[in-house]
Amino acid sequence: MEEFIMIFTHILVPYDGSEPSAKALDKAIQIVKKDPSAQLTVAHVINLQPVFVADMTFAQPDSYQEQVKAQGDAVIDKVRAITGELPNSDVVILAGSPAQAIIDYAENSDCDLIVMGSRGLSSFKEFMVGSVSHNVILHSHIPVMIMK
Image (cartoon, rainbow, N blue to C red):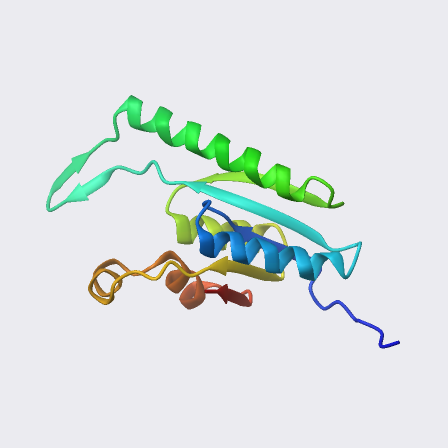
């Protein structure tokens, strides 16, 4: 029998409930199951930053913040149901710009792999704002695996 040597010990999966992020979580679970000592962290990022248009700033209303928090709680419950039997798994909530929050958490928590979904933005939208996965790939010093 061939011996499997695990080269990743702490995997981070940014999860938003979308199909690509679910595929990323499934792939990370497959990797982690091969080594019982490996750690899996699933992160949900809440972006409550103000919206900037030209020289004007718009704060998010309280009702929007409450709705985003409720959606975040639902995502956490879903992730815990999926990862419940895995040892060394955790779910965290991050706040801020999604790409930067993911990169900062991964670097500060000694993650050695980020597994995330690709969102498939339109070419124009991606050109204008960039996707979260694209920004993570560009700015992370940690290897990134993208699931389509």
